[in-house]
Length: 93
Image 1 (cartoon, rainbow, N blue to C red):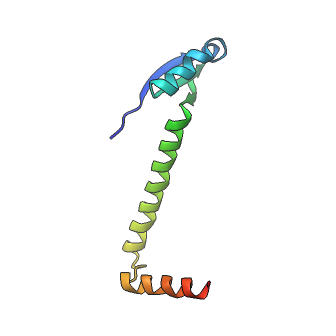
Image 2: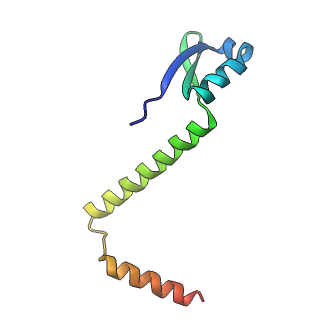
Image 3: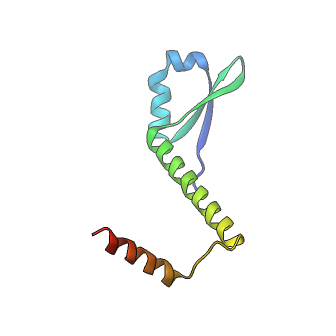
């Protein structure tokens, strides 16, 4: 499992030290928590890390839906599913 390192910086640092914060996010794959008046306000991460996190969340959502389908009995034999797909593909030609 991938653990994202975190650091905490005041909002003024985002304005005054953007390049440094950007480098932390991109090169060190670190999340930077931006605070306003001492309280967490925003989290900055690199774009590649964002894409990885988004992909993981989408996969987890799909797995949760699939688990719910199985629990609710909304399943079909694999052979039937492939037959349905074959028929759809034949119909689209």
